Amino acid sequence: MTIYSAILFVHVVSALGIFSALSLETVTLSRLRQTTTFIEARRWVSFAPQLPPMAIGSLLLLLLSGGYMTAQIGGWSVAWPKVSLAALVLIAPLAAVTGRRMRAIRLACASANVAESELIARLQDPFLKFSLNIRIALALGIVLLMTGKPELAQCLEIIAGFVILGFASTLAFWRRNAVPPAIHAGSRQ
Image 1 (tube, rainbow, N blue to C red):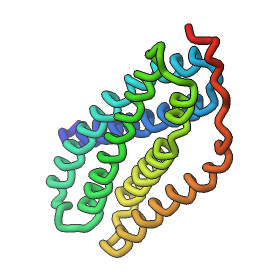
Image 2: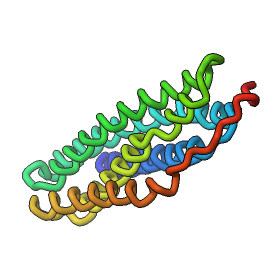
Image 3: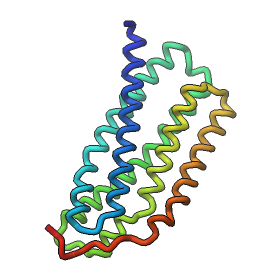
Image 4: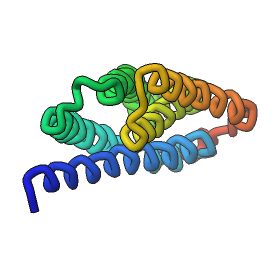
């Protein structure tokens, strides 16, 4: 086994880590949006704090291993690594805002003084779904760039197309969750 193949293994595993974190976030967000009691909300929101460290660690390993491999093959002279890096940079602010909003939801679930309407509004925050869909779309677009290694124009078209798919999937499922469930205040335990 060469150093390059070991780094490639780390790169693939870190990509799997990012997709695992996005998958777990999808389940958590879906369940949070369907909760009907404070107990259910607490259960699902308590799962969420483990996601950011997993995603951040995977992202750092992905960037380091990808940068190393790209340098080894002289890949910085082509477009796809640069566009992939730019797409990863677009994911970061969305994840940061999502993280802040999820912390606010955790605090609201832990508070004995939170109003039912406030918690429902936080659980139904459309930005959470939007952010998740765009991050998933960008990650999938990056995978296509890595496998196809297209020229600059195609790279930009691919990333733009996946962002549009992210927007479209948000809009398509927006109405499905338009009526929030009632959270039973009597079940705060």
